[in-house]
Length: 448
Image (cartoon, one colour):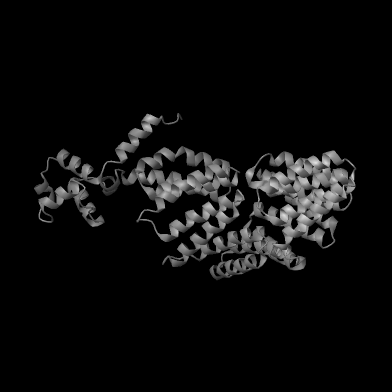
């Protein structure tokens, strides 16, 4: 199907933009009625005139009555769109949302693109927000984060209208927060999550599910900043809300986040316990994609607990699951974790090979800077242990460039230690001491 031309889109927008009063006047004249005849015994001629001139906005009941008098669809009089046309657009939108719910993200983006002009033509902001938010979420999952932010910025401007609820505003801000987190704009993400949470909490509408999601994602921000106490508090609150709703999917996601927080705190047995609970729920929900993610987490925890063979088995299973879904970012994360396991067990050739594989799969995705930096770090350490010092330096420099965009003291400390080890191997003890000191000072500011 050919794309709509800009001129045609402008024409549609002009037609949709006709005021209700102008549509009323055109329909009245077409029906051969005067203002007095249209008003009948219910309204005055002056009231009809005020509506037509845009001086007053009639109630829903009045619009229905006028539509009945004119023999037209109520939706067409109110919005310029008939109920049948709205139904067709909503059905197409529901199809795109179903694809999104099934994580068929590429297909979802295509569907949202197909219906973009039709949604705009309805002139209905509630449908526009659904389409913008849905497409943005699908694009985010595919790594198109900046494009998602543009869509969500438009949605944000729409939900500021008085006809939208605080809960709808909170949902858009929550999605914007996710996008900002993926771009490593952590403070901006926290601010957006804070604002979304306030709106959700003051809304009279049920908001426990959204609040649970906001808290779980804000926990990620605190974990990234190593403010583990705040991260743990948010996870506990999120879990309480999810359990109160008996929302199995939300509970699985929060248990996964709780596992990651416990891992950062060094509580590996507790971390594995949370991860196993998330795994059981994902299996119950037949959510294979998230099952792959949590299995990767269980694998690495097993390595930390001294079970490298089990770790490798879990990580390989996670890698296969992600490849089956075409989730190359998550697959790269799994293979990067495998590289770390092989590095620490002394299999340097395999570690180098898998680190390069992870980097090739990640490309220049801005939403996987942490994984890119980690893979470069593993690659550098593998080459350092092989005595390939110049190549190791290049890998460490690439890791530093990725980590610089994360604004994370702990990540910077990790690369400074690696560079210090490289300087030590070169017997540049002055530089090594400075790098180690930088790492120590950076970690002093981290809240554990």
